Image 1 (cartoon, rainbow, N blue to C red):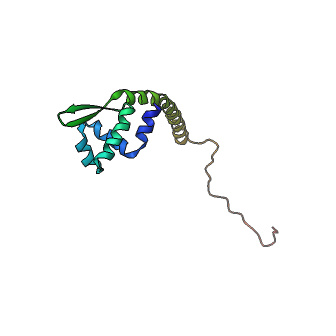
Image 2 (image 1 turned 180 degrees about the horizontal axis):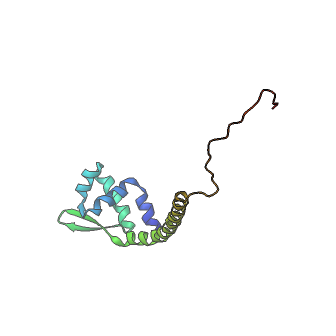
Image 3 (image 1 turned 90 degrees about the vertical axis):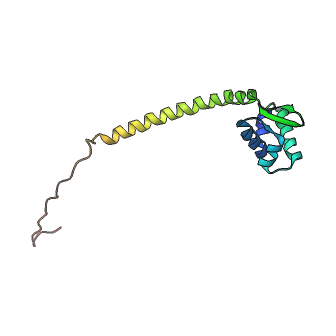
Length: 128
């Protein structure tokens, strides 16, 4: 799994994987889409191949690359543990928000409504 992370950490290799997600492609097509030279693309494909992320088949003079699902499934299984953690945190947050909403909608018995204050009359002879 670590080799998968290392392979995908490089932006061009990640872009190759995203392009191959749409289906198998020849090297020439990847060269055009990545706007890299053919030797650079081949080098990236070699790294992806060593990590088990891509497979290659020959079609006459062309090499056609395709994604291999196994390493990606391994990543998905690893991420699933964290997804469960996130889900439980989101559920707790939803519960807290529901409690806050219901508390806001209930009138607060401690809060008194104020009526007009009584006027205080002060006579000339009174001292404050």
